[in-house]
Image (cartoon, rainbow, N blue to C red; front, side, top):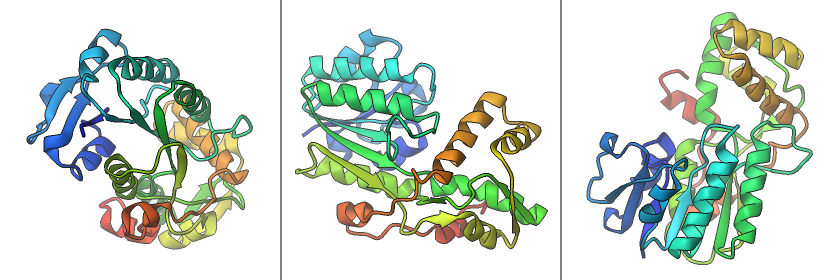
Length: 273
């Protein structure tokens, strides 16, 4: 069985492929010159160049479609990849989505994920959705900044988020790519517990300072984050506040046989944590 991984030069893609037998893997990336194949096949695949996808997906049985980064364009990019995968005879697509990609979820990342999931369901190919929660690794700088200031400014309120290690997301993806029986399933990939603002502040030895979304946006802009990015990140805070990110599941344990890492353990292992 031949497995292909899009975005193979990214952090998640590299972590997934490190867990696969290179003899069975096709690495797909826009910049193959920047990636060491390490025994796997290496092919160029650019979602903005549909012609590159025909050859990229040739002979592939299972495809890991790692979501693209550009929120304005990625739904169209994903749909182009789905169409090309179907035309190439790919049998099963595994997609990295988000928890609760429903119309009422306020996170700005949700609409493109929902559109992609709908396209996969309508494609006629087998599919599996890996709805990865927020990466625990992203909280390293948050905790470091709170530790330095003695305060954690947040608009999450009483909401909780089931932060998950990127490595656990990669392990879950590798398991689904190499096992049978996951067709037509959507898995919430989460850490072992849902973390609230007080829990996060305690890791930093800081106090929680509740603020509104506008204040969070302003603070991010002051820290050098572009306004568009700040608003996307703040929409995720709102999703946490409104309960869309707090569900904890046993999916990592069930899929990999290993318990997911706790946020504290991830941050201890992170240089910025």
